[in-house]
Image (cartoon, one colour):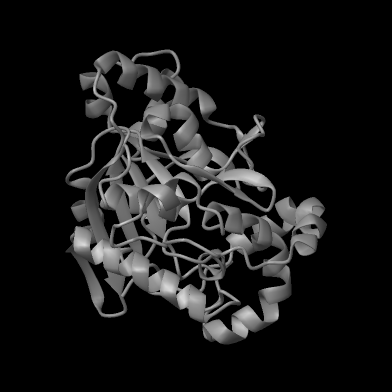
Length: 308
């Protein structure tokens, strides 16, 4: 569903009640007032205090939203109000130049209603599976878990993610139809462990999406949960939000970019209305800080927050 010719403010005004019900739950993927591990680890860094105090939706509203979350979440997640700022072949090439299998992409999509409703910078997590050549080099291409997906991978669907349709393969045009992406690398070095991880990710294909962003559930997976379950080495921090244990994308990126987490910072590509560019660690830190400060000034969390 794409809206053209309407201002962000008008779209948000009309859809805010619907979005609050769905994203009161979905905010679990972005922020919480008790960051737990990340709060401790980010002390005395440029990102100290990042992601704090973001549980702004009333708890009763969240509980009321539970039965409606899947249906409403699908509607809100489908609303695209403009093209992504880095949705360009040259930007895709810049992101993919340094990618290795199992790299994790954290994406910011402020051109989507879901992205504007969520505080912070990053709202979605995607894993790079690798090309046929990558998978052959790792000795996993002919594994029974991968064989059913050969055609899709050869067609360019080299990423795995979980969103409202469930866990599925995607191509770069789908994944990077967004405004910014930070790439992190988990500390998985042995060939055998990479094979096992890729095998487990392939086996997760077809699983349902977890609209409740609850790590305790085992029958469905949200985006960050998919990565965390497949790669415990990434040590993605969790926090308690609205009574659920969940993973916050901005927490993970903040730890990596300050060298306080298990994953390594690989690169950052960001865009604005003026264009896109590859950016460094300091720019990412500044963008995280700026977006959380915007959220503090706007309790309704409804502003269009470009990376810049």
